[in-house]
Length: 253
Image (cartoon, rainbow, N blue to C red):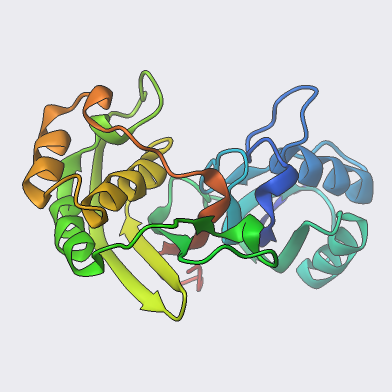
């Protein structure tokens, strides 16, 4: 009997040419590409479990995933071998062995997303920021963002008709910052619903344009109805920045 080991990967990818993270037959997905390359390298079928299922066009700077393997290759060798086989729009930043019980999705304590808005039309980098040609009141957007803090029902900010695990998310940080010609929205929560961050950005943009107030955002959130939230920001400005775990005796973080 071959004893399997559990390997944790930290991944970076450009989501522009992917149909999201989750495997879909006949479509190019991040999970599908990595599983195929791992299987080729290890000579066995591999099931890769990600911490979050990013949508089509969404990027990642620190996605976390894990898989079990009977291979005796060290994590460093797996990382180097995988990167030699992966296409240029996916990179394995780190690989390490973790306890058998570690689960990239269920053990995650929090996820952090960042959305980038460009206040000028750009040719270079246009695939990583949403160009918004309007004057925005960032202070008003920041004030309205505080509405999302805490444990809330985000049914109004979810693109999916249903979520098996419900619509409750605990948002622990939510803020805007300006850097030159760019605006950044960062939000951290224990979990995110499909399309949630992009809908938050769209609603807050309406606040910045003077079309909504913070009270209207609160009303939309409390409505628990997707029809209460209108504009959804495009996917190409969104990044999964990092996934955090509790540190245990084994050093898993």
